[in-house]
Length: 634
Ligand code: 3PY
Ligand code: ZN
Image (cartoon, rainbow, N blue to C red; front, top):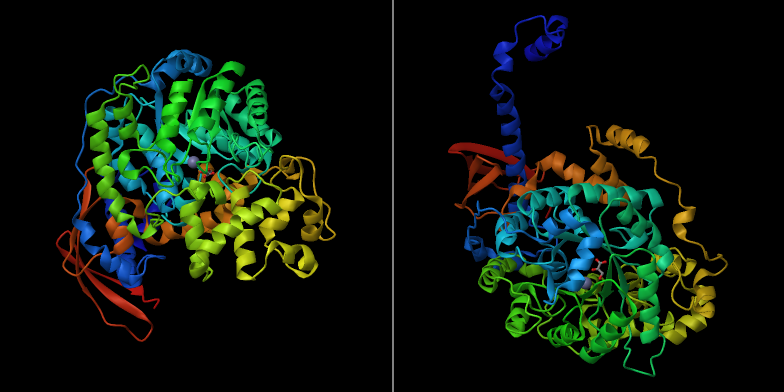
């Protein structure tokens, strides 16, 4: 209309008219944007009020309704941050940091609360909102930690797919508030933060961008311990001047002489190879919690003799032997261990940090951290955890069964809903046992994302179709296997230790020829510039380089996430209970959409179902009535 005529007028565009009124009053532009943004958020809340959040049933939402009142303690620290490990990295560089870690007598601790703990307990659902609110306090009270594992693994995918928030923004927001402690991420080698091999330049660009975003330590692993699959990622980390923690995945049992595919020597040789490849730190990634206390003693002692870099031990407490294992490992000389704040520790997550601190107090391994402060952080998460109750795995106690089924902690809380999703909930026990049978059929493989997913998918496929291993060998020719399983036997995620079982490979691949080279060698590099142009044309708005990366990793997920942002704006500003459970009639809520800008929202009424399947939702926004219309999907 009129405004458009003005702003497209040649004199206006050339700046030949007096626009100082506009220039000096930027608020002229803000009003519309703000109004639009508020409306989008109201539409999202309305949508959640009417349709709920995917995966949370109405009964469950009702059960958790009261939790909305649970307020997390307000923490605000303007005090300067204590000098932390990130300051050491800045001064000494990655090698210097590693030497420092080796020399420290005290046990160094990583806190996994912001990544693996919630990945393993509640399907990776912690939102940036809750992480952000405790970030400053974590920087101060957790200032003596070795690192915070807060990114990577499944967080990248889940934040876009389910939480509708940008993983890169999470990184930015936490980094701004936590400048002093090392940020650590989990990187799945050639699979980056996905479930499939990516072209080399995707992995390289991802590592470069993550480093720019503030990741200091990359824990790189390969899901088959295939070092060829780690090379590109490790080199990218080294080239970017970040800390390269190369991890070997632990499976089997080095104490069990009958189970001899992965004996002590296997791990020692692998560790030496990773050190030679340039690792600054050796990670032991005990993703299922199979490393028993006295096996840890044997392993750590042997490694300490054979390698000259610090050892960082990661485990899951599924058996409930995790705490004991870490104590024995500390005695054996491990340098750094992963733990989680007490309220989100144990079970399929990491062992309890606060308890470990108490146990080590006064010993030569005493990490000498702020125990009272870390208790406050744990208290915060105790409250916040309740918001995520619908995603809990419902495992109520440690279980020694993990030594049998070997399901990784990070997979456990996902595998169960997947099994239920296929209508196999009543056959859960069978699905766990089948997981082990599939492992044995596959030749006793390392099971960690993505190889663990393939084993899980095959196990569900077999239970669903009432197949036992002998049926697969006998009738395999006529079966159509899950695509992931076929790709695995094709070599698309690399080569397992000792190769594939040839007979099964033939049954599954039928006439297809398997690869023996690195899959990344065959994948065309992504032309990021062209991708950007294509994406912008497709979504019809400018996108950032980070978006292009996200889309290269998760094309469909990114587009759906982007569509959500276009429809509803940035919903990461909503408190978690509102995001998941909506509002009740009469509820009032403050939403800080940016520093200093707060919307006060009240839900007044939900209108009846209209002919076109929509409902009007009546809000009050900053005291003014506001109405939005949403589709009722029921
Ligand atoms: C992941 O790859 O996300 C894992 O946590 C594997 O243990
Ligand atoms: Zn883990």
